[in-house]
Image 1 (cartoon, rainbow, N blue to C red):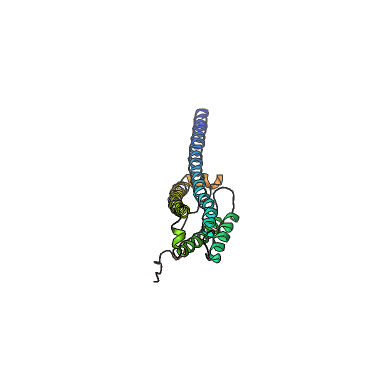
Image 2 (tube, one colour; image 1 turned 60 degrees about the horizontal axis):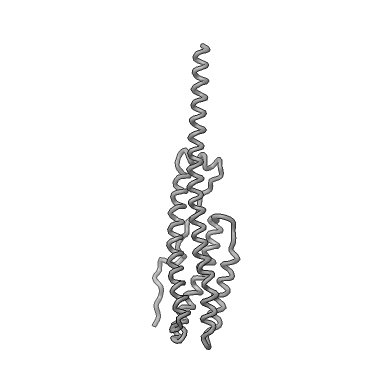
Length: 196
């Protein structure tokens, strides 16, 4: 009888050690994936900051044009200021990401209006400084799209892993929350109206 009890005790200890090792492995995997999400978010912030840094130069160049519509410039400056007011530590929650995206969409809209208005000013478009800034802005917009896609990819890997059994139990106990995704702007599914 003592041998059976000793055998059961040894099995329980070995089973407990295996469970702890498995839990530690899952935890370490989730930590690695979470750090991937944090890194991808850092890149998203980096390219948005690049765009925000280009805007004062763009506005100053455009301001140099005679009779340029002041209202359009003010909209760009105001939208950039609002983007700077949206802040949080680390990767945002779903609500924070929505607020962040709304401010970025407003800035994108203001920049689009600015570039459309600039079309009416051939002397401005012809300046080398404006062409360079416009090219940098276009490149930055492409970088933003790439980094948002990468963020969504690593968030998807992280979210998928944290929902798998047995990781879902470790994730719940250790506070590994689901990460939100970037989504398209409402109305992006409709083609833009073109007026001549």
